[in-house]
Image (cartoon, rainbow, N blue to C red; front, side, top):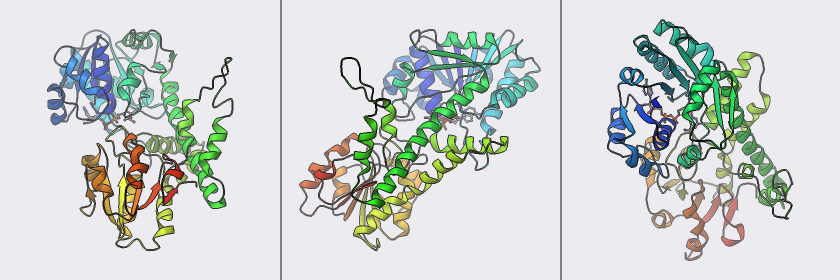
Length: 445
Ligand code: NAD
């Protein structure tokens, strides 16, 4: 199929590159000319495992990037909307989505024949039918369901493994205003024959995305609340508690042969310094606000957000056990991105942790294998001393705080053991063996 994708961020670019790899003719559209230039030169503007190879392989043959939305809509059969939907404190900000819908509508006015417009951005239930569809009808002067179709195809990729998630998805949700829209959308995924596909209306597709993200956020805040109680009670470690819970048959079923299969959700049932990223915090807040307006307040999700906002402060509490005043204390932060294998800093717990430490007069060094450049932009404080070298980060510090679960931090016990006077070590992710590190502190311990 000939596909145009508006918005070339994490979702739009990964979708574009992967659909091109699957044989479609893809045009990626963005307003950011620097991004377009990079993509056309085969340079991914974001860090994602496997993205560069696929981009280089497909660019100029089945994939191209442009800022010409109008021309791209005319030249394709289907247009995906993959622009940002930030939360503005009250509701999701649909400015980008509405603007793009207007532009697509204007192009549709000049396009003979059927076209399908699909929302891939995460939008609250009702948005595709009640906001996007009317804007398309108004600006195109055409009728949805007759001249063009409208669909909703939520994206479930996880940053850091986005390419793999797209190429081997666990499900594909095909939302549409009518059967023709869903049929057309399903042609885009013909190459994914073995994958479970759910055909549904647009509102359900939107709700599936929020429900999935809210479940993950709830599991994390639940684990953090349990962890916080463990550390208050004493003599009980949340890691052992979670291990015991994970062994329940509904979290680690035992196959007839006796082999246990731990459920991947167990990764979210673990205490730490909080969740971040561009999706979980924003999506939970957006659904809470949407529920509130709809007259269905979401008390559980309120608590999920509240716990998460407080969680980074636990790091400070642990540091204060060793340093009642943090003024002049040299602290290394290991990991800045909100999760490993990405350089995405959006809502990373590293941001409030570093800001709190600076406010208390600590001297902060920071190291992330790939996110230092992004972190500089987000934290925007010259007092932070960034380093690309883990060894340099550890040199002459009083304390080390692990914030992101990067694999390279597995070598921390050996590195610390080789030091003459090892610093206090705060494991913000309970990633390392507490017995393998001298002055170990951890969330939920
Ligand atoms: P992003 O901010 O990385 O990218 C959005 C892109 O849209 C930017 O490159 C921006 O320049 C471009 N853009 C904005 N206005 C435009 C316009 N008028 N015309 C053309 N391009 C325009 O966003 P993202 O992380 O890719 O997220 C996009 C959507 O997907 C959001 O709704 C998000 O919630 C959802 N989502 C994100 C993820 C994720 O892991 N990042 C996962 C699933 C769903």
